Structures are given as structure tokens and as C-alpha cells.
Amino acid sequence: MKNLHFLVFLVLGFALLLLFGCAAQPADVQASSAAPAYSKYAPPAANGVADSLGNQIGRAQESQDNGTKLTLIKFHGTSQCVSCTNLGKFANATLEKNFQKELGEGKVKYLDINAETDTANPYVQKYQPTRASLYLLTESASGEKFEELAEAWYYTGDEAKYQQYLFGLLTQRLGE
Image 1: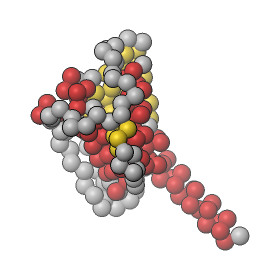
Image 2 (image 1 turned 180 degrees about the vertical axis):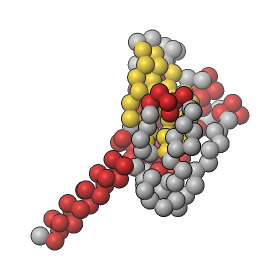
Image 3 (image 1 turned 60 degrees about the horizontal axis):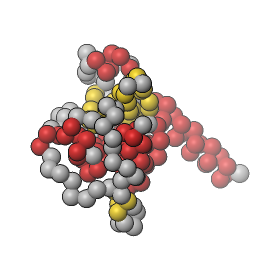
């Protein structure tokens, strides 16, 4: 019975964390507000990501020039826990490692926005985020799609799995 109670409290705690983000937790990590300069990146050394055993996973397809643009946006508050920080750090690392060409061409970009202090930001005003979150804005000939990537939270403790998840999703969206 104790195990059942523990499991219920664990699930409820995780649900509250996802629902309210980490704004109520003490600031154990401060995020950088500086946006990276993507124009300085050199071509990638390897094409694809490595799985948990270090094997290269090649690109499923080269991105087609179909006009699709992706903007990965991490919204957060001033205080961030380790998971909140990793949410953005791992996303940025995935782009730097696997989407250098697309970053250079402006097809893919990453934004780290403190929604608590940057209330005048057009993305904050348009989408009105209420908690730490990662979103993907897809702009294509068929229109604009704004989706929360809530699954990314499951991988904030494992960068390799996070990169596999995000790499697959972004590669799919670029090919649409």
C-alpha cells in the first residue's frame, strides 16, 4: 500500500511540475539571455546524431527547399531549475550539432525568451506562455503551426535521448 501511495504522489508531483513549470522552485541555475550567433558556425563534422551506444544515426532525408522555416522557442521565467535549463541547452545543442546548414540558411532558429522580464517580446505577446516550455513554430506554404513540445521534458536528464527525439521531429517537419 505504501508503494501505491508513493507512486500516486510521484505522478501528481510530476503533473504539477509540468502544469506549473519550475517558476516556484528556487533558482539553482541562471539562464543566459544572450542569443547565439549562428552565422559563425562552421559546417558540421558529421551528419546525424549518435545513439546511446555512439553509433551514427544518419539523416532520414536531406531537407528539401520547400520554404518551411522552423523556430524553436524556449519560454521560461527568471528562476529556472536544472530541467528547465536543460530544456533549452539541449535544444540549442541539437541544432548546433545537426542543423548547421539550416541554421546558416535561416531555415531553422532557436530563441530563448524570458517571458517574465521580456513582456514586450512579440512572441510573448502573441502566444502568452504561462510556464517554462519548449515550442516549435513551423511556417510553411500551408500556414503557421505553433505546437508545444511537452515530450521534451521526459528527456531533460538524458541529452542523447533528447537529441534523438528533437532531431527526428525537426527532420520530419523540415521534410513536410
